[in-house]
Length: 277
Image 1: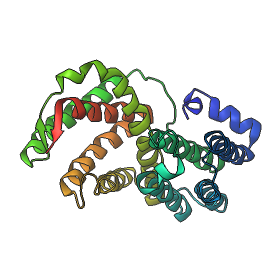
Image 2 (image 1 turned 135 degrees about the horizontal axis):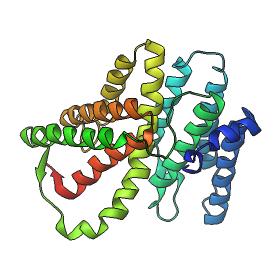
Image 3 (image 1 turned 180 degrees about the vertical axis):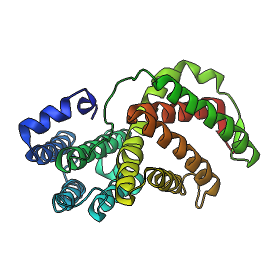
Image 4 (image 1 turned 135 degrees about the vertical axis):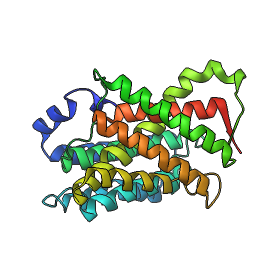
């Protein structure tokens, strides 16, 4: 997942393997799943079929849109398939060992690698910003975005009875490892999906960066409507506002790493300083 975020890796891999590299990555993911099933005694034709469908249906869709402009219906449908699979898919059934405890992490890793295969290697989507690095002016964009969002979201969240101040002092020793987990297994994949791909593709399809930014932010908000309970309109509102700040950071830096830092910081501070009402 993160190997492809190293500088120049995707470009070198694409140059050597061509579009076949995308299918090679998808096949490698499927092969690793077969090894997982065999090694854990979880072999099942239904699980094999589910994983094959998750990997190769989106790849087939994208391969049929090779000549289509960015933001085609195949692009958007593929993003929807990936999101639905991660959000609502039977991950604990697909990854039963060890007792489903790593199901979410395994699902996210496969989903991110599938997005890399389909969009970065097969579709050659431009300006995704899938890299880990730091720009000279990023400090202002990252921490400015975090500070302004916090100044809006905290009083608003308290006012609408969504959050309450409740610091978890006893858990602060876990702040660093948990924050890294949030960064790479929640913020990073969501920023790839909603900013690097969805916002990027919508802006190209609509022909307007601001429109793509706003639409993607609202869709990001609505993707949280089932969190905690349904319909959770307070979550939708705050997540939409958050999406605007994450999307602004991505637009200014051109990197999902920068927007993921803002996103991950918000989630980590929320976890340690507040409780959801």
